[in-house]
Amino acid sequence: MKITVEFSGGAELLFNNKKSHDVDLPDKDTNWTIANLLLWIKDNLLQERPELFLQDNSVRPGILVLVNDTDWELLGCLDYKIEPRDKIIFISTLHGG
Amino acid sequence: MCSVGDDFDNQTEKLMQKATLTKLSDTCNKCRAEKPCIVLRGKDTYCKNCFLINTVHKFKASLGKSRLIHLNDRVLVWYQIGHPSVALLHFLRTGLDLSTPKKLRFHPIILFVYDQYQLNNKEGKELIENAKRIVSSFGFDCNFISFADYVSNPENVPNLLNSESLFAENDIEKLNLVIHKTSSRTNRNDIKSLLRKKLLIDVAKYWKCKFVFTPEISIDIASNLLSNISLGRGSHVSIDTGFCDDRDDEVRILKPLRQFDMKELALYNNFNRLESLSVRKSAVNPYSSVQDLMAKFVIELQKDFPATVTTIVKTGDKLSLDKNAEVKCKLCKGPVSVSDDLVTSQQSTNFSRFVSNELVDCNKSRQERFSTICNKFDQTNNENELLCYSCTRIYGNFML
Ligand SMILES: [Zn+2]
Ligand SMILES: [Zn+2]
Image 1: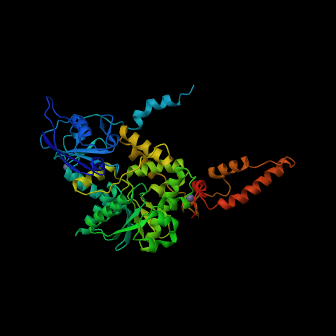
Image 2: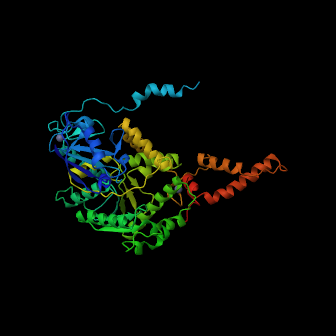
Image 3: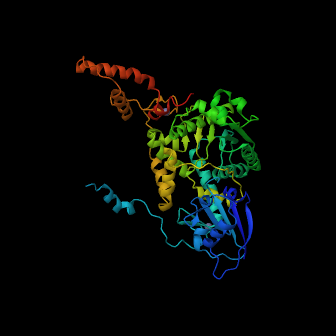
């Protein structure tokens, strides 16, 4: 499943300073949720210091998440089921890594 | 048995609302028609359009209400790392470009203060380049000054502004020459913010600006307020964290973003495709200073009680300056409470510290001992008279 993942507000510093990533998630039997995506990002995209991005199986407080320009709080946060071509943005409000 | 905590536990529900997991509204809180795309304070939902209109309106209202700034006034804008500053530049640019009566009619001058000593040469250069690029994308010129150079030579502002070298290997040594190495991190933070304020005022005066805009948002206000109280600056809360700091006679420092949340501004920037300035940060131990601890405290409380920050900020807004205080502290220019007959808590604290450090001459009568010690206290006290309580704590920790 092809989606786009973006990092901004300083979160990109943890991803080789690259903001936009076109991602092809491997097929799996169950739906892809954001919770699954976070683990996938940790294993496949994150370059350094995972504690600056993840905390307690979610994003670290201070990182905002938008799916197709909608606040993930309106979409069930970690449980949101990812659809093909979704654009998921992680915005750090901590001004850096 | 102590039962203070028990009572409190039963009442917390009444005191501040906990973050709820109730279902959020399906339509925008404002227009009641569109699908919402953002949740603020864990409960208020807005569609993109209403959110953007609201945010801009809130900024204009904060400036408009004060009616301080007049036609063609010059305003120094402190541009910093992070989302709030970029949002501020966008508010200013769109406000200046309006052709309606709501158009902003003053002249902003942008200043970036370089103080990122954790960065290496390459990162420092990149930061400055990015700052320049972002500020000029709004049609403003970006001006620079080095904090370390200012602190070593505050009289030299005209030459330091936009100087070729904004950082040097010995910046930290320069700072250590002024702020004593032995000072606690709490005191260093306090001294740095005093000096930074002085820098902004000095630059504003040099460029004939009557106002300075600083980019603190609600969470900064809340944690500064609590730090202020813990550091004995309680009597200055209203000027330190209020909209307008007018303790300088010529330059007023305004905080036009103090009612905004970080989420509001970060998403405002995202929807407007604005890039903010970010840097690699060194990890800070939250227990190393009062200011860091207060920030941690507020952030963590806010997570479970979304009304935390607004409650603290609103409570702070109810505090006002002691209008009777005529003496200004020679360091922070805040009012120093002096009372003729009543002894203030500051004076009592000073007195007991003084008395505890004095040796008692037992050959004298009680009366004599009392008057000797009072006279001596009055003498030493006169030297400190021009300092507020909190500044007596940091005075001597740095050179002016
Ligand atoms: Zn709406
Ligand atoms: Zn003072």
